[in-house]
Length: 251
Length: 305
Image 1 (spheres, chains in turn red, cyan):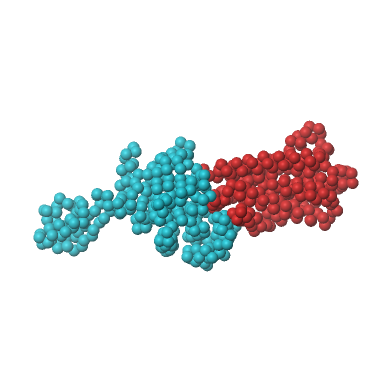
Image 2 (tube, each protein chain N blue to C red):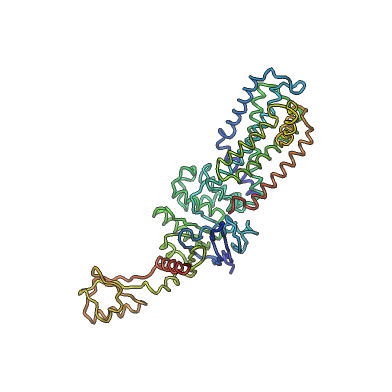
């Protein structure tokens, strides 16, 4: 247990020491999104009855910030350690592959939650955002950041160079998060896009998270929960297998 | 007694490149052992397999009786490795790095021992400096310290003195010698053969992924037939006929005579005395590990061709 806790502490300390870049900067850019959308779309129709567009937008943006930062944390920590070579200190130690997995994932969850919470608290100053079912919101934000942490770990292990990681981030994570219903409800989309959106696991994270705020969602939160849980399990198993086999870590 | 490291029939290839072929090696507990060989001979690959950083294609490795694959946690607890590359984590200070490394080995409270290694490796001034701010030599010391946080019985150092200045080299060897006297098994690789010769009890020489020599340092040197000689500056500068068959070379006023053993020196001296030749200078030349290394590498090279 000490080994796991130490690695977790190290991973937390790693991003905390550069908190300006890892917490404050993403908060600012998320709030900029909000500011711009607020300006352009203020007159937009209500998405759900009684829910103004800006209020609808906030949970989506919070979740997007959580997703992107959870991914960034595990992936950049892993690839930096690999490229600078200091991953050797973890590989030489008796840390089990499970301990390594959980430490990286938990640190990603914490960073995701910190950024998300920061964004949420700032928006509270300007808007009245309900949080009707906090348990649901918390459940989805934790599961979502865990999935992205695990994906980040996989990407960090897989990528040999920074541009491969950037490709993973720009061509997979970004489109999936932007097209998951952060800025809109999928019911406003043409039918074909609605179907495609259902294939995007990020959609369920955001929809479920939003349910925690408004008590309304595009699809049943139980279905979202099931799908998100299955995704987490599958991605975690893949990441654990990679660590156990030493894929791209132990040659 | 249980060997500190036991390598059995280990093979490793990277694609078509055979990095190691059928390596068998037993390093006894308490030994000071050197792994020598030219660049690319497979030394670092072998060390990486022992440390679990590289996975062998065939064969088994045990550290203090624990299989490095199936009992990796126990094996790694018994092993400290100083990597060849100067790697470091730029986010932390020296002290943080050492305490974090202790934690990886399951040690919760290690301040006393960490302070002691900081002191003994002369890192006290830099204990709270960020790793980025350290010179190469200092980083090397931190690497050594990191390998020692869990007091491992077996310590492997991969070229610990590469690119290190003379003073640090001395401090480092004194420290490592002390560790060996305290009972730690030491395995090192180095290109400075005189270091291996003065420090190590036993030596394995690797070439192209195979062990081409494995013996005590003394035996290896003792077995060198060619190599012992006496160099003399004489007045008059002429050898008596009895000694001429021994002569290897004679220039710049220095005659070099081959000897098979040191008893022959007595014969040379008496021959000179009888011939009334005076000795101005005399040097005994004996083979060192470097001669052994060169001769073995040359020999095994011609065999493999």
